[in-house]
Amino acid sequence: MQRLADLQARGRRSILPSPGFKVVETAFALDEALMKQFYDRHPGNTTAAEAEVELFVALLVNEVRSA
Image (cartoon, rainbow, N blue to C red; front, side):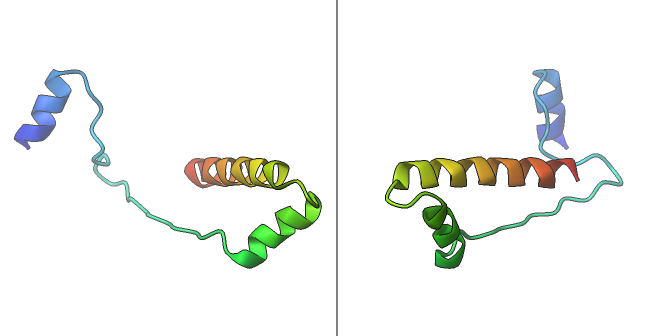
């Protein structure tokens, strides 16, 4: 509790959830089958495929956060 009080005194946000809220951790892996879909969409252009994967992951994380 002292650590929480110290964080609040310094105006920092605690990573601890508010009472009544639950924390859910998820993990996903970009396996070969998923990556193949992006590489197939951009034949011979790995930079474009990887850029699209980064966008996909960012959008996925955004959806999970807002759910």
